[in-house]
Length: 164
Image (cartoon, rainbow, N blue to C red; front, side, top):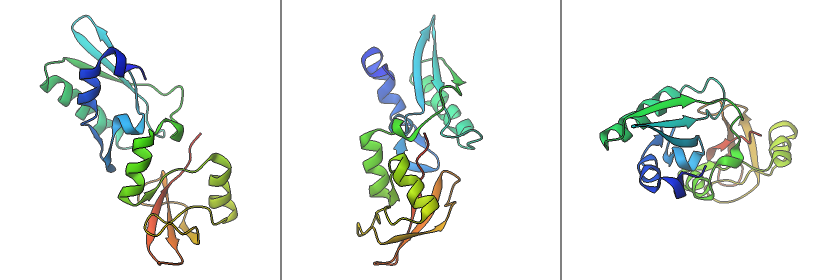
């Protein structure tokens, strides 16, 4: 998205809107904001869900509208389904914040498949860094995460599944 160069004041406001399921991430960190366009006296913010049916999108749209309108920008929010969101859109800062929060950031697609389908021990523990981890459930606290456990420190943790 190119709002950083076009509308830095809008991007700064959007950085304050967090993902309701992962409150340490802004919607900018998640990469769900596709574009911001000025249409006469209204902003049009286009967003893409992290997966179809994501229950957080209505809340995110309301928060975008409230945040921008409170700052004096009449706003419309439009859901855009194509191209589909991918975990590649999570920013490096977003990946770091996920890890700090205790959610393992998405791996590359091949490693993700090994971890989720073959049981390969490639997802590092967010507490101790060990890759001696195992998947407990294909689904964690939300559908986009899987539940893992470290076999060294015994702590459970979520893994944000790779979506491409």
